Length: 253
Image 1 (spheres, rainbow, N blue to C red):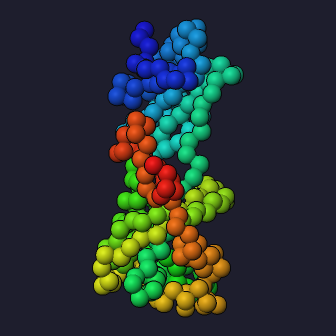
Image 2 (image 1 turned 135 degrees about the vertical axis):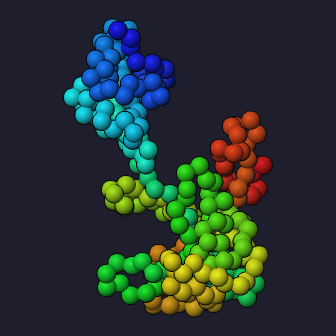
Image 3 (image 1 turned 90 degrees about the horizontal axis):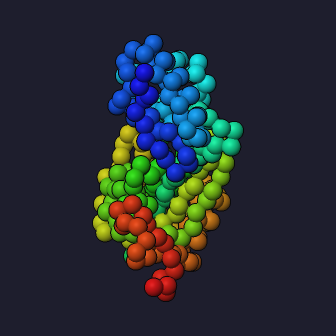
């Protein structure tokens, strides 16, 4: 009997190739059991098993073999199994990452939005435009994209001024929210009507003095107005600019 095709990873584990999985659950169960015995004898510590959605009938077989759910996407389920008690299986992502943009024009007006989606009974309120970072997206690109999508205003990234970290967010995950200062390259507003109820240029002093604006939103805008923040930078020889970004004080070269 052939073991399942696999590669090894830095954690001393076997990573089963999803492209090589048999379609038949009985064949899969037999080969998985034989593979687990072989890998255990060879000293491998754990197994990573990615099952594509098209082969979801294999999931009960893996569960019966002792595998646990690790994470999922639209197209697959990842399961893991410890062959040795000391095996280290890194947990899946624990955080959401969001961005908010402080866009201030030459007239000291702040670009603000009022979202359509609110908790039941919650009154409308103004906040900064922004949203979630997409997979593989840089912070700098994400905030420029989000501001454009929600307001129609073109902007240029200037600096990262502060961030907020909290727990117990969506689906029990934690959340990091980066606040960025941006320079407007246009003024005309074309708001995203599906998500945004209102979008205006509001005098910054009015935003900071209003009793209808949350203390959190006022605090992060005040931080953006009073602090130069840290700028998008680069460290030569450390990875690829397509996959990494750095933020440092402007006087650090």
